[in-house]
Length: 193
Image (cartoon, rainbow, N blue to C red; front, side, top):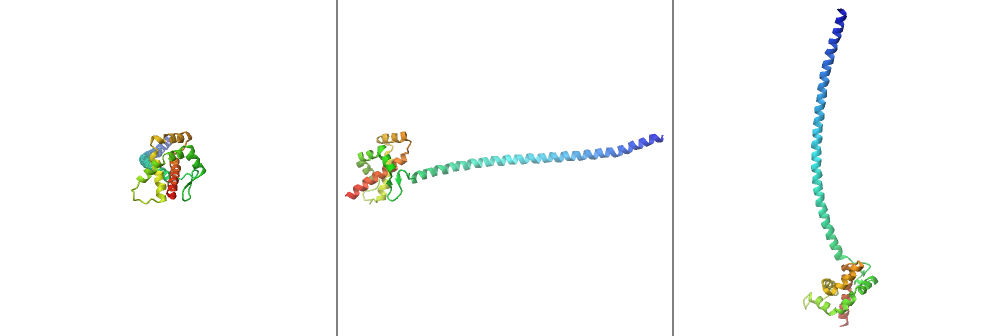
């Protein structure tokens, strides 16, 4: 019996130590599972916040992109208004045509157009202001460009626009070149009088 008692005592002691250890370990395991679950819940919430922030950023970027496009359009318009093509015009005062500007003026038919329609173009220019207006040379320069621009939609301008199309040129360049030539014609007559 003594031999049995020893084994029984060993088993009881072992069970007395092992079962509480298993229970304590199980408690720790369960506690760790809850902690991990809680962490995953926080991660899910953080991911939802990030998705929401990302969506807001995308909407903001679309607004910025739209505004940038508007600014680009406005800058293109302003550049077009202020642009002087250095290959066509010398930017010294007064503006004058370069050799390239002269070539465009002649080859496009712009010079012939102005020479053949000079009286009509002068009348259109002087109608832009009242009779008593004292035109400066600058006024004539700017109004000459306006008059040419006004004529670009007329049927008589069709061949000139066709030349521009076939040669990949801009109507703005031709308006500038023709405006300077018209200015010189009008100012030349003014000086002769």
